[in-house]
Image 1 (cartoon, rainbow, N blue to C red):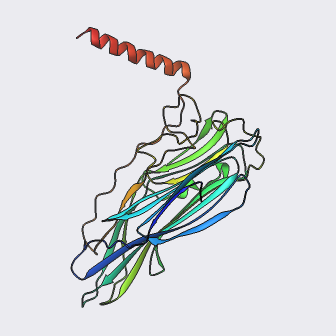
Image 2 (cartoon, rainbow, N blue to C red):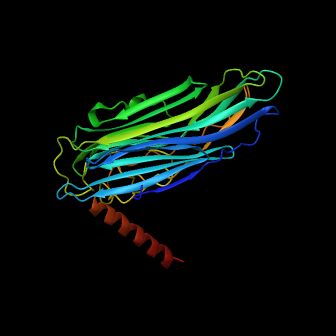
Image 3 (cartoon, one colour):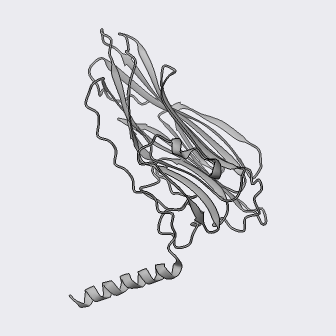
Length: 325
C-alpha cells in the first residue's frame, strides 16, 4: 500500500437526535477494495467500520507501445446529518478495480412505544462511460438500501459501448450520450442527485434496527482486441464515478479526449466528494425539497479554427467595450 494514501479512524460517530426524544442513531462506514494493474497480481483489502474510509492512488504503466493508467479514489466520511461520499474509478489500458462501500445507520428506539420512521436521503450524482473499440471493457454500478437485511431500494447499471443498460437507471436528470470523439466511439451516462425517501418498518420499544446504504462500483478493461494505444488521449477506457462530477468537471492527469473540448471528457472526470444528507423523521412528515438538476455535460468538441475565432471575437469585444468607456 505504499503507492497510495490510507487513513482510518476507529471510533463511531453518534449523530445528534433529529427526529424526537427516544431515538438514538450511530453511523459508521466500511469498504472493500480490489484492483489489478497491467495484468499484475490482484490486491484486496477491507477498511473496517469507522467514521471515515479514505483511500486513493493512481498508477501509470510504461509498457512500450501500450500505455495504461488506473485511478482509484474512495471517500466515505460520516458527519453530522449525513456523510461525504466519492467513488471514482477509471482505467485506460489493462486492469480492473472494484469498490464496495456500506454506510450503516443504527437506530435504537429507547422509548416505550413503537415508532414508524422514514429514511430521507439522496443518491449521489454520477457518471458512467466507456470509449474505444475494445470489446473487453465495461463499467457497472450497483446501489441498494436495506433495513435489517430486507431490501428497501435498489438500482443497477452497466456500460460496455454497444451492450449497455444505461437507460435502466432510475436517476434524476439522467442523460445518455453516444458518439465519436478523437476517432473513438463512446457512450456515457450522467445523472444528478436523486431523492431517496423510504418508509422503514416499525421499530418496537427497546429494539434496534440497522439501515444500510450500499454502493458497489467496478471498472474493467482487459485490452482484448484493441490495438496498442499510442497515447492516453485517444486510448480506449472506462470510468464509473459516484460523487460530484458535474460541479468540478475536468481531468485528473489524463489528457482531454479532444483538444479544445469545451465540456468534460468522457473518460477522466474530476470527481469531488458529495455530501449525502441523512435524516430520520416520522412517517408522514413533509418531504424535503428535491435536489437541483446538474447541467447536461457537453461532449461535442469545438473545432480548433472555430475555437480560435470565438476567442478572437471575445477579445475584440472586450477591447471595444474598453474603448467605449
